[in-house]
Image (cartoon, rainbow, N blue to C red; front, side, top):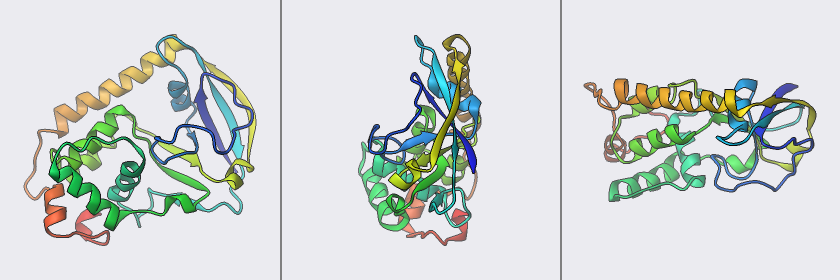
Amino acid sequence: MIKLYHGSVNIIEQPVFGQGKIYNDYGLGFYCTEDIDMAKEWAVNETQDGYANCYELELKDLSILDLNEDSYTILHWLSVLLANRRFDAPSALALEAKEYLFEHFSVDYEAYDLIKGYRADDSYFSFAQDFVNGTISYRQLGNAMRLGRLGQQVVLKSEKAFESISHTGYEVATKEEWYIRKVNRDKKARREYFDNEKNKRMKGDIYITHILDEEMMADDPRLR
């Protein structure tokens, strides 16, 4: 059993399987976090208060895809992101990179009841785009994903998972407090990215061109 939180402008006592946006990080599903503060940030916008809905999820008999496990790399996470988010691929390199990641780092994520992994806020999504476009290295992408307290998300994917969650209450999130926190966290991540990462090339850095040219696979130690 784990405790989960879902930020929303609504109180959601019973999440409904099959509803939601299809262009989220991991496709259609119910997106939660184990961090109530993060849920409060997600719940508000500039003009509206929200709620951190509180749940308990029974994990027994649920199949779980944890993209943070050692058997996966950031490229596995990126392949899932590319499959679901509207991704700008303005160059031939970006298109080739997408095809290569789909072919060699794809994950059968729809076969699982539950997914755990990074959440791609706008800033983090832009970091991923920079990598695919050849602007930053694999090392820089990994460092960027840890900027600004990104946080992890837990996504219910199957009807079985939806049947295993129960609402236990909610906490109010005011826009005056939590919207500015959300904005500041995003600004902090972008500032650290540009100050410390984007222009900080190191000898031996691996770029998407190296991965393509050398046909690197998931078991390549350089990607660990």
